[in-house]
Length: 147
Image (cartoon, rainbow, N blue to C red; front, side, top):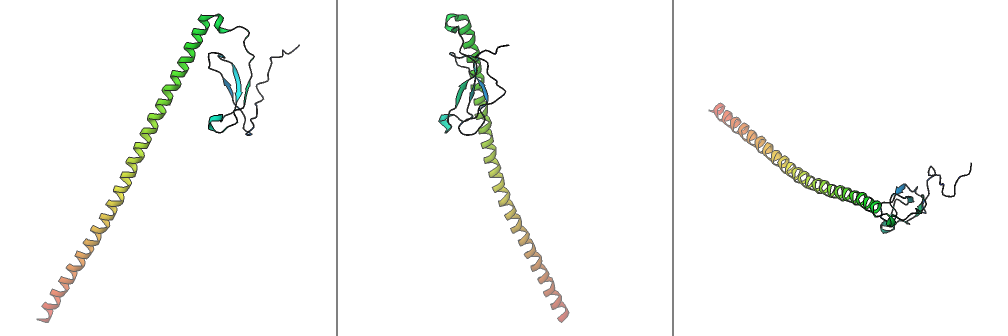
């Protein structure tokens, strides 16, 4: 049995120049729809090496020869982009909500600290008032016993 030249063992992952294993990905571009490749986790824009290697051979038939295939692929691609955009927006919304909750938590913690300080002050004033009352009662007892 002869293995074709296009056969690639995808059980063995590629290793990028940054010494990270490259995940197997699938192209969603109109020129290479559903074509698989290995690509570095970190893009060049984010400081990575941008390692890249196709796994699937380039199709011998151009999708441009079959507009109905191209349009269905474009619809799938656009649906994927829309899903991605929706997820990105959802992530932004969640991050905004998280930031708002963090601010509320910070405000609540500051209020709690202020309330604890007030409580400490009130307790101290109450202890002081008790002490003054005890001194007054003692003074009155002393006066009554002296007379």
